Image 1 (cartoon, rainbow, N blue to C red):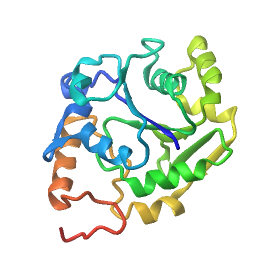
Image 2 (image 1 turned 180 degrees about the horizontal axis):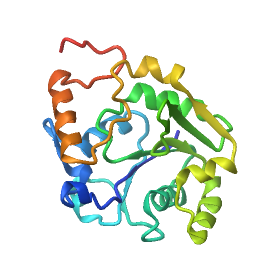
Image 3 (image 1 turned 90 degrees about the vertical axis):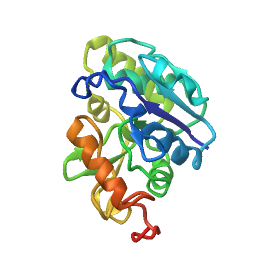
Length: 209
């Protein structure tokens, strides 16, 4: 059992302030697509958002930030404080191509580690990672100290890296960690969706669908 939290706190300035998770994506929205994935892993899923209104109709708990203005780190902290089971699987609301096979692998990799986190050639992916609830006091200390980079936590806890060799079988198209920050990102994501309606990068799927 684990807890899953979708972090939806960004202001999305480059998208004109439109909530990224609420962007239309196929027949649903990005965040509804994520819910379908996460609910195949755990029944305990909630959203962390500084503005709950855009997500109020989803039928799941929407939790406001414990510490307003602390950015993504504050979102992760809130997820850990409000979670009911370890590990806490955290996903950013603007990652439309996450899929259950990889997320299950990530959860299973957590073991006794404080953090299980993917590491690609571009670096760590702290907003698609598993955290133990015991990390919450360290995150709160960082918030109080004004150190708002999630990666700083990794210097102080036991880390399980999920590296490129483990990621590759789950991400043949290189889009697993793609996010939607700009109109151009959104357009590319929609093009990928049109090419692979059932979702690129998920092993075992028919790429001719």
